[in-house]
Structure formats: C-alpha cells, structure tokens
Length: 59
Image (cartoon, rainbow, N blue to C red; front, side, top):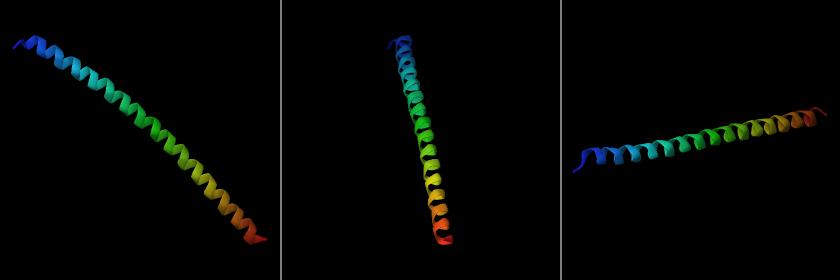
C-alpha cells in the first residue's frame, strides 16, 4: 500500500465533496430566498383580500 498515494486520493475526494457541498448550500440559500419572497407575496395577497372584505362590508 502506497500511503502518500492513498492520502492524495482521499484529499482529492474530500475536496470534490467540499465543492459539491458548497453548491448544495448555495442552492438551499437560493430556495430560501425564493420561499421568503413567495411568503411575502402571499401575505400581501391576504392583506389585500382582508382590506377588500372590510371595504365591502363597510359599504
């Protein structure tokens, strides 16, 4: 067994895993931003509906 060779292979594999992990984290962060914007849109929609109901019921 060639220990330096095996350690280089392990290091290369770990580096690739680290890059993949970074991509996964970036994707999760992007999805979180998308979901937060979707939530804000839903809240604005609900507020609009409530305001319209209030206006209609007040007439």
